[in-house]
Amino acid sequence: MSDVRLESSEQRPYKRVLLKLSGEVLMGETSYGVDPETINRLAREIIEVQNAGVELAIVIGGGNIFRGMSGTASGMDRASADYMGMLATVMNSIALQDAIERNGATVRVISALHIREIAEPYIRRRAVRHLEKGRILIFAAGTGNPYFTTDTAASLRAMEIQADAVIKGTKVDGVYTSDPAKNPDAIRYETLTFTEALTKRLGVMDATAMSLCRDNHMPIVVFDVTTPGQMLKAVSGEPVGTLVQEG
Ligand SMILES: Nc1ncnc2c1ncn2[C@@H]1O[C@H](COP(=O)(O)OP(=O)(O)OP(=O)(O)O)[C@@H](O)[C@H]1O
Ligand SMILES: O=c1ccn([C@@H]2O[C@H](COP(=O)(O)O)[C@@H](O)[C@H]2O)c(=O)[nH]1
Image (tube, rainbow, N blue to C red; front, side):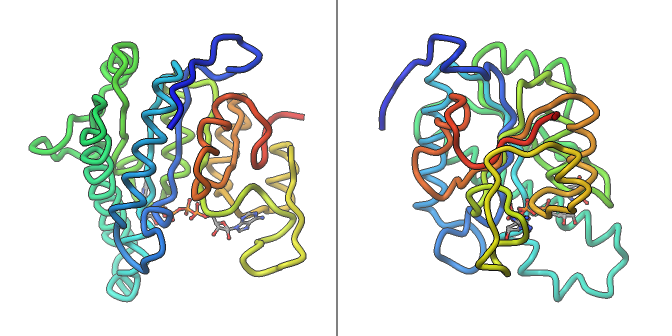
């Protein structure tokens, strides 16, 4: 793994980024939970980004755990099911914290729900201070509110910590004209405006998250985090995936 430092502003447009990691990518080739090899590889890439001089805060989804429990959750009160989803993100956050620490970097899990034995509570100014001190941050439990998603949590926290961009690492390599998992003829956008993404209902990120980023001028890069090396390229401003920004 390289240990490049990105010095010029042309090479490194992003000094502080919010990385949204899809929960499902943590599964690797397995069908549920966290694959040790995959999370270890992601941890190394995260540290590589930090070593390049980028301040990094992370929000992880819960799809690898929660989607597997959707049968259990069906018929449940929506808010209760959502709290289960948020707890799934806490488990993923702890797993990622462990993997990052084992690879030698300093990391803090900050939770939107109070679980003080295992994670710090979310206090915005404290979170920013951690970043300034060079610690990697993992925001667990989404927004702490039901009826939201971790995409929205990523957008919200990006605004709060004054990140330069949200980079969404997922299993698709960008935003397509329609869901590439369902339509093999879908075409990938290299760039896209928020208005286009919203009016065409391009489903890679939910509308609440998109609108929040649009209204607060926060660019989003959607990229394939299953391909090694893409994360560093995404924060370096190299053309990877799809850049969603104002027109
Ligand atoms: N227009 C589109 N372009 C790209 N992907 C799309 C589009 N519409 C739907 N998708 C789907 O969006 C999904 C985004 O995946 P992802 O797993 O990141 O979702 P998530 O809800 O953020 O994460 P999690 O797995 O944690 O719940 C992909 O599975 C992809 O097939
Ligand atoms: O702010 C939030 C974030 C998440 N949830 C619930 O958790 C699951 C898992 O998150 P994903 O973004 O789908 O990976 C989500 O489906 C919600 O049920 C939430 O309620 N509030």
